[in-house]
Image 1 (spheres, one colour):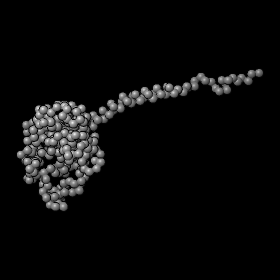
Image 2 (cartoon, helix red, strand yellow):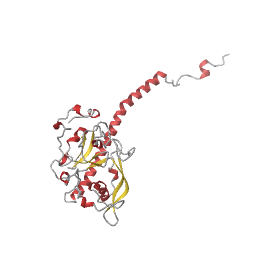
Image 3 (cartoon, one colour):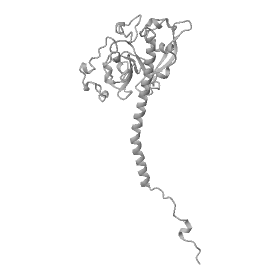
Image 4 (tube, helix red, strand yellow):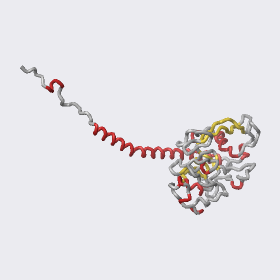
Length: 291
């Protein structure tokens, strides 16, 4: 008699059972996924950088609103040393220099530290106080209003990604290297759209690209001061607020053509008008757009 068992009855029917992937099929799937990632990752990276650039420009527009508010309420004038200055407290009494306005301004208008940082440069410097292309600068001292009036020096950490034009505001005791005659006292001037006011920077105060381009990215800022602002933070340029309150991206090779102070020549040797040629730029800058 037949037991009713068959070879397939012992193991169960094969109908409906899922067949496993072969090694070749698995490798094909992995290759397709790798290809898709290779295509999508650069797109995602570009989108993120674009979003960060938009947020950076939004920060600078906020600075423009604050500065415009100040100027409008002060007879159309920028910061004068006598407007904010009394003395520092310790260690030695001294006149607060006009460039403290960058810190004092925050104290006057409230805490706006949320707009001090470009989204691409929020981490503190690796060492010291000077930032880099993708790191913020840091300061350990600041100015603060004293209870009895005036201003004093206090331990106060500031961290930022932007710098202010050091030629804004006049001083009671002008430096020979910063004569008041070359300083901006009001934004209502001819060519205001070409005068940088606040911009991406490795330090809090910057005096303009008066020296040659940096030989390398993030070069020593003591030896090459232009490296403070000539940084490839936004795909070949930096963002800047101008004296007409407009905000735009500035190509790195355009920096030497801006009107940093009233005496600055925007047609100097590092501009097309001054005869600069593509091969004259440091090697790391030659890939950037010429103007």
